[in-house]
Image 1 (tube, rainbow, N blue to C red):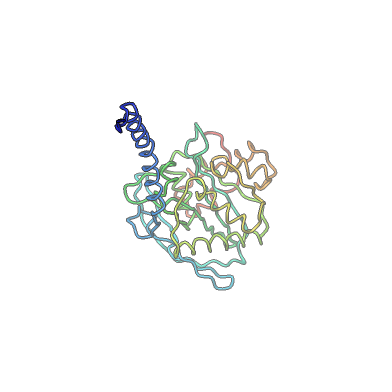
Image 2: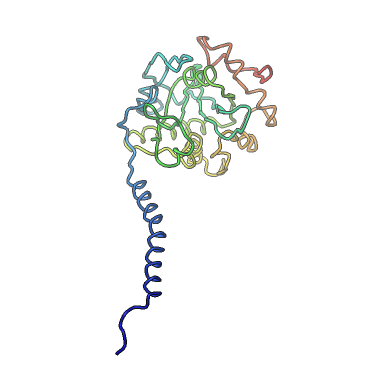
Amino acid sequence: MQSSSVPPHASIGRVRLKRRRYILGTPTLVIVVLILWWISQTPSHDRTWQVGLTRLPGITFDDDLITITNFRNFDWRADGTCDEQWETRTYDLSEVESLWYCLSVFNPDGWHGPAHSILSFGFADGRYLAVSVEARKEVGEQYSVWKGMVRRYELMYVIGDERDLIRNRVAFRPDDVWLYPLQATPDFIRNLLLETLRGAEALRGRPQWYNTISDNCTSKLHDHADAIAPGRIPASWKIILPGYSDELLQSLNLIAGDLDLDEARARYYVKNRAATALDAADFSRAIRGSRTRTDR
C-alpha cells in the first residue's frame, strides 16, 4: 500500500511559501491602509488656528466695488506677538493701476528654493491690497515642506495691508525680500484681482488642502493668472520652488524696467530700505522708488 503522507521537503516548501507571502504582503497591507487613511482625511475650517490665520476673508462684489471683511492689518513685534486688527475695506476696481510681486526667500545665503510670494495690487488713491496664499497652521504646528505634501495643512488666503504682510517679513525674519513691479495691462490687473478674490471667497464654502507642490503660495497665484491669460506664464519647476520664480518672470519680460536679472534684483531689493521705514505711516510708499541691494 502506498503512503499518502506528504514528503517532508514538500511541507517545508509550503511553510516557506506562506512565510514569503506573509512577509511580502505585510508592507503592501500597510501601504494600502496608509493610502486609505490619507484619502479619508477631509479639510476643515474648524480647528484651533495660529494667530493671524484665525479668520478667512469674505468678499462681496457690487459692480466695480469690492468689500473685504476680515482684512488683516496687524502690527507685529519681534517676539511674534502682535496687535490684532481685522478691518472691513472697500476698493473700486476701476482705480486699480499697478501689480507687484513680493518674493521673500527663506535662506538668503543658501539654497533659494524655499520662499514665499505675495501679490499686491496698487490703487489710484495710494492704497495697496496684498494677497498671500498660505498653509493654514494650527496652534503648535511648524511649517514643513514634507508635511505639506501629505494633507497636514489647510489652504487659506490672507488679504491685508502691506504694512502687515510685507513689513513682518522684512523686520522680523532673516528673509531676503524683493518687491518687483510687473508689466501688465490695466484690464489684466483688474481681472487678476477679481479672479484671485473669487478664489478666496470660494474657499470659504469649500475647504481645501494646501500642497507643497500643486497648491502652494505661488502655484495658486499662477493658477489665477493662467485663468486670465492661459499659457502666458508656462508651468515650471520655478513655481514649485518659488525662490527662483523671479527668474521665470524676468525671462518672460514681466518685470518692469527692461533689466537683466541681476539689475532687477538690485533695483527691487527692499529689505534695507524697508528697515528704515518700519514705523512710517505710509510704509508702502516708503519701500518703493529707488532701491538697492548694496550694504546688506
